[in-house]
Image (tube, rainbow, N blue to C red; front, side, top):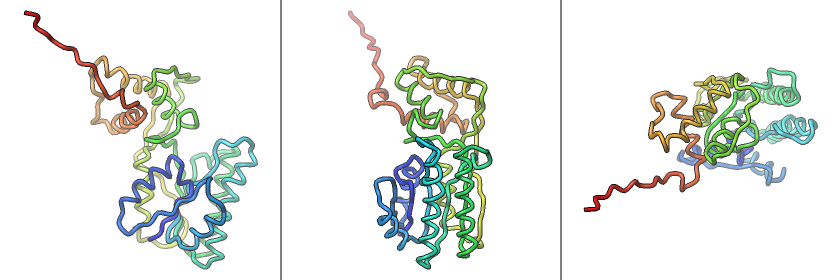
Length: 259
């Protein structure tokens, strides 16, 4: 089975591919910024399933929202339709599609494109309006408070919090990937399906920062976080991924008898 992942070098794409490569009889086809449209055409021609994760969320101009989110989605669906090989597709949208901002508008328009593809070609399309996704391999100082806080605190750098009471709604990347992969084997009727990733977690920026700081302070307090708490366990695992190799070493306090 050939599975195409667009946005393969991105945070979610890398995590998804790491999971897909464990599955027997699955060949992963990757597409990202370093590829050409000809590369994309060749991979779409043999794909049996498509994860469309590629998109733009931090452009230099708002026009890039249109080209990176709407136009690329239109191109992919058009090529699948023209090749008379319509295949199931999972589309990574955003909760921002519910809001009137340039990014959200472009994601909503892209949802419309994949919905028309499902209707006109009689295939299954699953749309996920993702909340803030956190986990390993997420780039700090980009668009994730969790990644930025983990990186800075792990490296003993300061962080700035404009509003400590601002609440975040988070989902863990491994949970996202498990939901995505379940769609390969789902037996469902064709059409458009909207899904949410569960579980999701709510926390304020101030609480998030203090929790991550407590992970760093473990080296002195030797108090292990409450790993029975699902969110804390996932956040702690994320924090560990930002540590340098030497941070896993502890100095020994030698006890000697000088007699």
